Image (cartoon, rainbow, N blue to C red; front, side, top):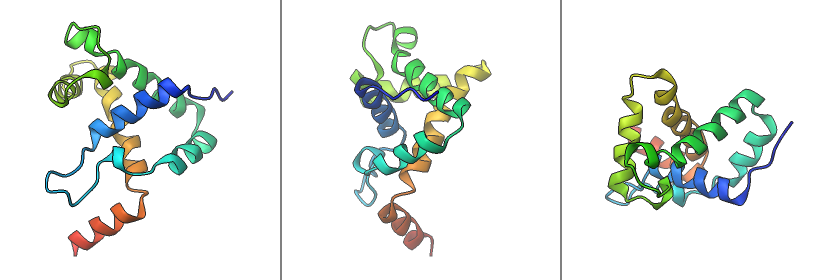
Amino acid sequence: MRVPWSNTELRWRDALCAAMIPASKHGSLPGSGDVDTEEFWIEYEKSAPQLLRFGLRASVWALTFSPMVYLRTMRRFEQLTESERGTILSNMSQSKLYLIRQLPLTIKLMTCFAYFRDDKVRAHVQERSL
């Protein structure tokens, strides 16, 4: 059964993706939040296995509300400063608990798939690797 994402969940997902791949400091590459990934996400929802779709959604929810645990604040992830976001992602990525480490990794993996699907991003990376 496919349950469509709410607009709120999409905003949370996009904030997490933007935190995973920020724009390059010298401006040569856009951040994930600056790339149109809508086509990727539509295709993902149609073709990804149910367990992967569930895992991504669970990761989005867990990371969105992780500041309550890691920073003892009532703010959600998207309401944090860039520094606070980095602290949470770093702490979760270094957790002793496998499940906690997997949450940001799931978001990071899917962000990379969406980001590198963009023709301009791939062309820039290929140009730099020559």
